[in-house]
Image 1 (cartoon, rainbow over the protein chains, first blue to last red):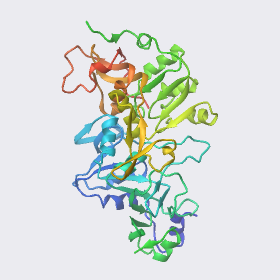
Image 2: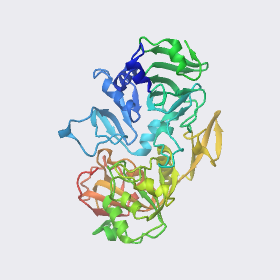
Image 3: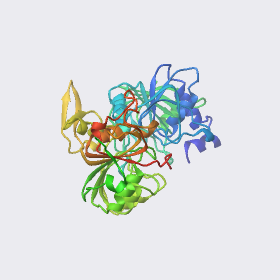
Image 4: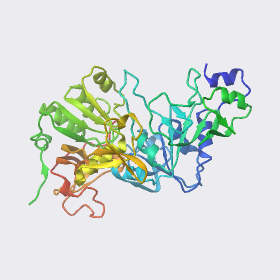
Length: 223
Length: 226
């Protein structure tokens, strides 16, 4: 049973849903930052940054200043993001080629990258790809570049796997995307900074106790 | 008079051989040189090595070239085909070799080839499985991997406008890998939506100067489908 289902049925707390999680991350992004959002929940974060707060969104495929999703009748088929979704360009936005796009990433010009992950270790290792499947070929996209290149890397993920195993771990079991790269982790239960001493708790959902949180977290939580 | 504009896709692809290393621009369905890729299928060449960010999309162009088993190796950051399992089937059946490259390393290896730089160091991939077999070095106390340039025999490019000198502009996110691949092949072949008179393209907005381009064919195929 997933943590989400348990929460609804018998627990004293409600885990954040995808929207809640995106909203939680968006609250921490200050005006003026240039941000790259990964595929999945990270992409949703853009929708919850208030319109009056100027944050510039970057996409690997050569777009800076990505705006909201277009209405169905205003889709521009030449304008997509790295997740291959149709997007818009804000005033002030620009287009550039892939080498310039990754110069922005690798040259440390992005303030923040938000990625999804399978696991994050207590030393900040991130694992968000797999070589284990025999059905599908491995794929990395731009995650390795983003993880080492952006000024800071935040990860957004469910706190546990579908079968209830911790995703915050002492050592990643999946292949690494980058070692010692993650600064902060947002899960559907809590927010942590990665520190020299381990997972430092910043906040957790109302009604959840530290004992309950520690029980679904591998590695020590510091308060 | 310099005139790089050719009359047909067949003429544009003349001389492409078996075993060629082909740089294919595009990201998702946008900026894909599909008509050149369909033309490449027509030539019958095989045993190709393809460099592309994705393994094509749908059932056209690169995806169809793969399905016909004309490609022996793909060098790619995200080997997926939206809406198709063609690549997975070939990969599972061991019918295609994959060199997985992080997207920024892929872009920089292509850029380096175009700029005459044989190799460069990057932090991307350090401490991961993709570092295996690669040389590393320390600069200012930090470890970097040595990556080598990736030069193509041909590059297949999609542009928005082109003139007879081979000057190119692109449209929105259709730019992606196209301008860097145009610099990195012995023969750069372009399909362009529009042909402009010489002097019509604003010199301030030309993205690929014609020096990087050998052949241009006019293909007004319209919006990306996918």
